[in-house]
Length: 337
Image 1 (cartoon, rainbow, N blue to C red):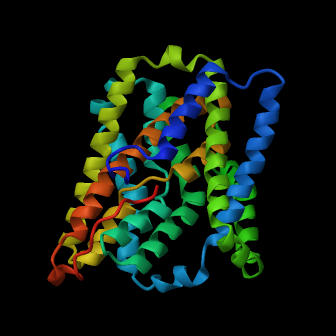
Image 2 (cartoon, rainbow, N blue to C red):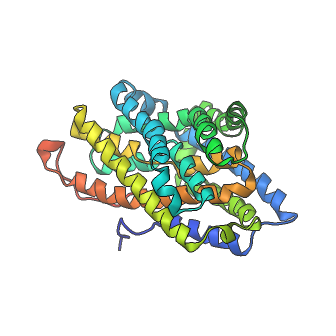
């Protein structure tokens, strides 16, 4: 029997288990440098595979729809940061300063790729445009996220981290260099990647789990859970829910206000309201000092699961619309994270 779309998926449950493991058995002493090196290698492998899997044709397929792409990018890199700053007097008292730093970091992250496209497909939206927008968001995030993080996150709470130029350089070296290498080798390894997609998918997620374990190990050793009470975790649920609701409502309203069709509206909603855990975790490791990374990652981990559950329900509602609104109704199916 299929898991209901609103329940946590296996990866989310594994993510929670990893956090629990890091809390009980953190990597310390001689094990810490080993896990740091292993994490760096796994991140390089992760982005190498993303580069190898990304089709150039898929990007070019939707590149001409510039109004849609601009709206998605504006929602991702302008609307979210503005919400994070404007709502700070209301939302910040619900959490600790360290957690709200993570909320601001969440606001400057790029959109997801896989789940944005998956939900757009389920909802019968503009899939080529979704591929283009989500991919562009991820690539531009390599440059935009470090700049916004230094403008918004560091001044707000004084989180230690490299300068914007230094951060971009480190991200280009650790993330973009493997990504470009994978993409350049795509003509020779694409077939092998496709044949072993299930195995590579496990490597993909294992890399994220390893980064989370290493980050939370360092944070736990520095006393993370002594600094984050249960009341703050409950408040974080409210903060993430408010941000997601406002992003979904704003992107829907803007799409309709600017005269986009239903298929384009779906793409804007699902690409413009999402935040990438896959990009956020390795970027945080590059941008921030190790002891602060655990608390900074908590908001994006929670937001990640919340956006999957809410968007799964929303995608199925879009999919049930009548034919005259954009294609024949289809039987809803669960989305993969």
